Image (cartoon, helix red, strand yellow):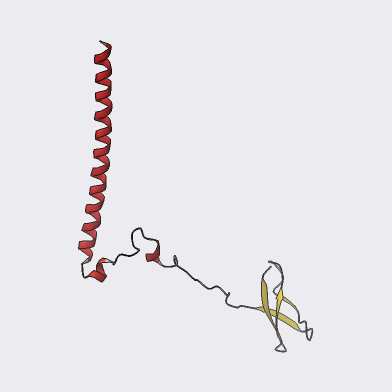
Length: 114
């Protein structure tokens, strides 16, 4: 259950643990006047990695960015594109090798059957 801060019209402040959906106003625990729930900042502390945009990128650990090493943005973009092309070509070559290997196996199998 969450804890809420309350303040009455007489100035008393206190904290009360109540379920979600509890009323915003109720009698003060000290003087009986109407107390209202106060807005307060949550106590959240972000520790460790993963909280920044750059923490979630692949391959960003241990490498310097293009702007830090003095390269321009267009150099970094063209480098990324050339890496993608190389990966696509490698995948295509692997598929071609598998296809040619299976066709050779089929040809050898049909020649042996004749």
